[in-house]
Amino acid sequence: MSTVESCGWTAAEAGVLVRAMVRAPSVHNTQPWRLELAPGELTVRERAEPVLPRHDPHGRDRAASCGAAVANLELAARTLGRSCVVAFLPEDEPPDVVARIAVGEPASPSAGELRRYGAIARRASHRAPFEGLAVPAAVVRRIVAAGGAPGVEARPVGEIAVVARLLHFAADAFRQDGGYQRELSLWTIRDEPAHRHGVGIPAGRIPAGAVPWAGLVRRATEVPEPAELERRLAGETLLLFVTADDSRLDHVRAGYAMERAWLAAVDLGLAAAVLTQPLHLAPVRSALCEDLGLTGYPQALLRIGYAAEADPLTPRRAVEEVLHRGP
Image 1 (cartoon, rainbow, N blue to C red):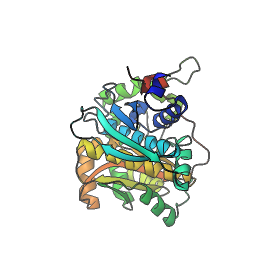
Image 2: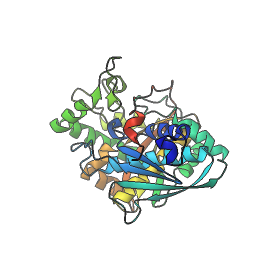
Image 3: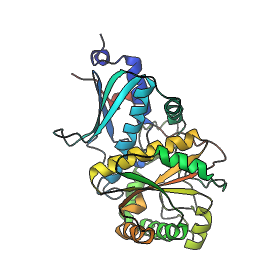
Image 4: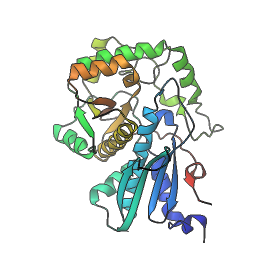
């Protein structure tokens, strides 16, 4: 019997679980997670490395990335026909344990779960402009409903002028931040067949020149004025994920909810990309709370729209780097 099978999972089942997990979005495509298998249980642990002291000094994005991985893992387990109960940051566990998924008796997945599982393989960050077609309100409501999670609100943002002004401020700040620029360069990988990296952002996925939002901003990036940003963002749908508090548990749950919404969007024929870096700036967070009348903490912005073509997938870690096969 193989080591995987001794943990109560066949090699084929383990492959399904890991492949779904590693396709979750993560900060700078670092995939900061590990998976442990046990009979009737899946454990997601946060990796001790890598760290991004300039981009993610408080570890919010690392925790949210792990939450997104939990969302994919849960869908994979459901697709295998197992019931699931997720416990985030369970008590009396080491601090690196992000979640435990108790896997129970056979239970057929719903049609919606199967469709969202299928969306995992197609989900990619759309860093280019969208086509400018409005997303119907009924579709937005379905995405918002899919992104529900305890303690997390997915809020459509209509205050585009406020967002444009704050994204312009953030983009200018990061463009001038030498430490941030050096860190971004370290995590940008060359698009060459000889360079087979499992982590990092392919250089070809970062748009050159002017961009319609703040995010992966380089020194040479032309940041449009707020009025122009507002015009471009008006052709997109923005969802803001807000949590009741700002603890690690909130960050994990926000990532979980965001990924569920993202997969629902892909299933409905849409593309998306997440913005978190601007929200690491205290002035941006404070202004969003004040100008939008938020009663909680903004954790992520999800841009949603229609794309002219599918986005290429980014590289992922090998199974051996993610799956803990036991003693």
